[in-house]
Image 1 (tube, one colour):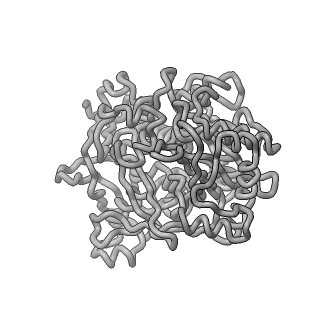
Image 2: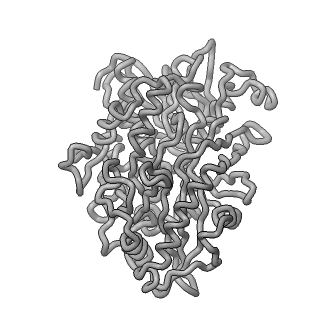
Length: 495
């Protein structure tokens, strides 16, 4: 790689890091080194590329990092992809934006440039929507191919859910990324190609032509152990191998668990917590203190006969509004998987808006896996989830659900006053939307620069000051696109 006027190191080649590397290397005056802790995307096989095998990726067929979260109901398995493409290689492929009011709240909190009218064009520019590309709220020429599952691709449980919800008078929604059509039941948009295979951000953004650029170096199996900070400025990184890399600027894009962990190991975080680990604080900041996620109960169901279909686990979705107007929970079947008995699936109901917060802390030693505590589901959230349970109770009585033989495997009266609490005690599920551990406003400024440390930024889900009301995958792409744009403009190296 030819080193030109300014060298940028990106830590993490996942959902956001792949986007950053592609966009920053468009500027000929910059040289970019992308460091990914896991393997390259040349290991992708059917466990990654076949959407129907996404649950296999969650169970460890594809390289992931499982981080258990302490919770009164037991440990909640969490996952982050640790390979080029990151979590975009192991998630459910759901490509939602959240709601306009989510981003307007960021702007109202003083984060200029992050309101819905500021970010909408970035969402549009990122997608190549095969279904709605001619719509003014969608794109038709972006890197990410987006379409919705067809009925002939859906599993029998998903079809029964969609048709049953429609029978219970839930409105059907053609485009669940159009807020004007919500609430209702609709079909997930997903990032798959014309052959029905998963497209990760590394495949979409780091094309062969991009990887051939003289000013871009991609290193995999290159885990960063520490950032170098000297005189209030980042100067480079050290890998676990011992290699040191100098940098003019560093962007940390290692995800909601590993970005705060790296910052804290490098002396950026709560001073008292760092002192407990013998680390001198370069910047006393509330890193890792405000973890958010979408959590909710999972209910085991089974149905007669085979699974059917070829689609991934995220197919049809109820976007529910407990007050009849504002979407505040998601409900949908996950799976199913074939077993010796009935075909099993999980009906998950995820709360989208909760004031509960968890945390990410260094482990017993600074280089151990982090200690993660789950955000609690506060009382008002449980009340809102009861609305979702009432919808499920109505669905169970619908003719499509009955025709398929859908029935709970651990029977629970969904309309009992304690039904939500009982379901949470049995099985609490994470949507995999961990955010907010290095948020703008307290750890970062509105340009995602770490407060008090020159040359250092964070760009991934951890920067989100509040969690969006939807899947966070596309939000990470949006953050990376905007941070890259800001850096190129600030550094004076136009693409």
